Amino acid sequence: MSYLESLRVFVRVIELGSITAGGRDLRLSPAVASNRIKDLENRFGLRLLNRTTRRLTPTEIGRAFYDHARRVIDTLDEAEALVSSYSGKPQGVIRLTAPLGLGRRLIAPLIPRFCDDNPGVEIRLRLSDRSVNIVEDAIDLAFFLGEPADSALKWRKIADCPRVLVAAPSYLEARGRPASLEDLAAHDCLLLRYPRSPEYYWVLETEDGPRKMMVSGRFDTDDGDVLRDWALAGHGIANRPRYEVEAELASGALEVVLPAHPPVTAQFGCLTPHRRLQDPKVRMFADFALRELRPRF
Image 1 (cartoon, rainbow, N blue to C red):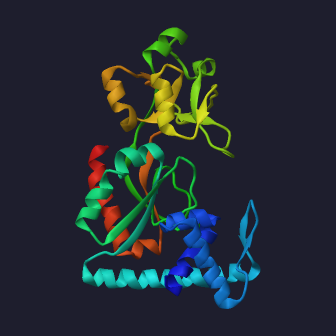
Image 2: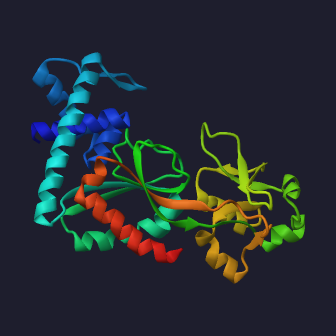
Image 3: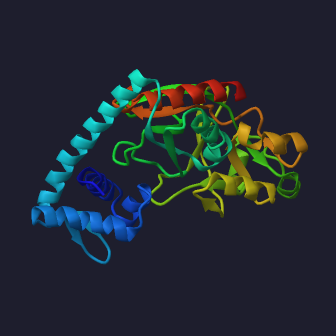
């Protein structure tokens, strides 16, 4: 493995916080990734990382070296992007992230088609309903539901994404159908939560504008598909994107709850670090996703 490839391993290990995670991201075994770090340390005769059984942190010189190595890799990636823009044949890796349900249903099916048309491109898709630090995790393109707030990122809207409150008929027959927003307090609301998540609330439409409703329930999870499955099984009321439960609503397996007060419509789009948007392959995938996904909403 070349010195440059060892630099890539070192950078990803620092960014992801472990040799195992850094190696996995580059499709290397932990042993190979560890050897690449040792090669760098032997080259300089300096320790770049402090290793304990619980944590891996850069030394002072390791942190300084990371800053320079990151710039070297960014410069190389920009040079490759420039060559690709002239050749018309995109090359290299695109790192994507998306929420679990959205990623499975909408983003994952696009990837084989895009790669068939662009055989020089590799795509690495990471799915999670937890928040992701796009810059620190070196993400090229993040698909997103909600209201983007980070001005350091470029936002491209794909479509408005209506949301609905849904529950199984069996649950509503047993517990009653809410007639007002206040009735939600007497119901089991199925919550999308994760460690260190803020207090939980739903923002619902009213005649006077959006209203924040504090809700609670016995179950919570960090996987939106689990919420849908719990709703289907009759365990409570879930707040889901409409596209995700369209088939269940059509079949009668789920019903819309409080149709006069739907959750506030979310924006569906993609976020990109500004410098990544200059990469033709990233821009091409974003354009491709917009063309393919807009008609679905």
